[in-house]
Length: 110
Length: 426
Image (tube, rainbow over all chains, first blue to last red; front, side, top):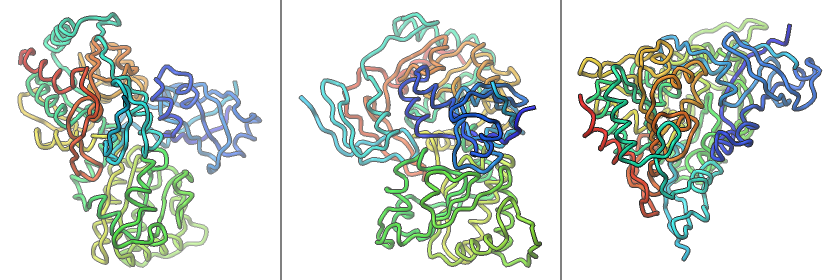
């Protein structure tokens, strides 16, 4: 059983910069596979800064690198992009908008 | 010889900063000043040299590519036109006409951005103002669920927190800045007050704030913290909101992409409307793509609805959750797609993106995006505001004429869509 957190996706300057270099560029891949969690959550996983982890939601999985950040415990931030997209469902509850934020996610060590 | 053009408009985001200076030589952009990192890349990473279209990855002539695009659209029983938001207003108008002629679905990136804001506007109304008024008059700024430091980096300096305006000559010192979010974003660090809301609890906090503004008797229960914020803090915020001279709320994806979606936004709009009983207050959605506001405007003036429109019955019908792109793809209702100036392959949930990859697609995009790479036909058009003309709507609904500074060497989206409009059969 991994650590259960809440996934929030969003924009970052690095994600936008990587996007301009091209979505097949290494800069973009590095920017959108960079997850952030609270230091205590990183410690609970016994994971070093930038360590690889598997994220699992009911919609899919993604391998990312995790870094500590000034976030409340229990929250995982991942920039929008192809890695986050595998974790997001396509149900829109009648609005057209999928839930890109507030998704239960389980973090496992690789 | 290097040429210098001033007052160029950047169309990367909804701020539409129109004070950019660009230096260019022999049709190449060599330097950009005043732009944010996103804006600099918008200009410097664009190679305006003509490119040939691609059909299934192979280079083809423009005539061959347009013939194949026409064949795809004519063969489809239920085509989807999607994107629009980074194209010029004039190109969007042509795209909507094309959807009308084809009996197609037409949806913009609004549906995975501020679509829920559109629903809230229809439910509550939009107490709005221009960014010029914000700069000149606002002494209280409330940012809810948005991160301008990453998405709209020059918003603070040009329009809001640090801008010096006619009635706010001290700039930042003359404004109270409140941020509400689930995390302390870079922009929130400079706020006078930061409220950390529990994920998915914005509606509860907004409802409580509305009750406090209307002075409803609420009883504090020890240890109870609504959505992560104490009643005492919310009382303080309610007092500040009511006592400011001119308040403006800015809201983003923190409200539209999370549990509650349009209901969250409607609650914020109600709060803003009610605050006008006590003072002057407005709200402006932080629009992402450079002309996403234009996409809403054009679709509304042409069809009556801002997004999620079906022309399948020969007249426009509105259906968020039904005619929105992700829903159409999930159900397998679209059998071909024309994508204009957006990259759903990179930004849709994977299952919707996979479905898009399984149907024939015609993509109009200056860049070879992920969607363009997988397209049946990719048409590399020019970029509005750089090498092709047009206009765009700023996030506050103000339309701006773009001033291209390079000679056009690629066709415009408007031109290509005009050709398709002539070629397709109704």
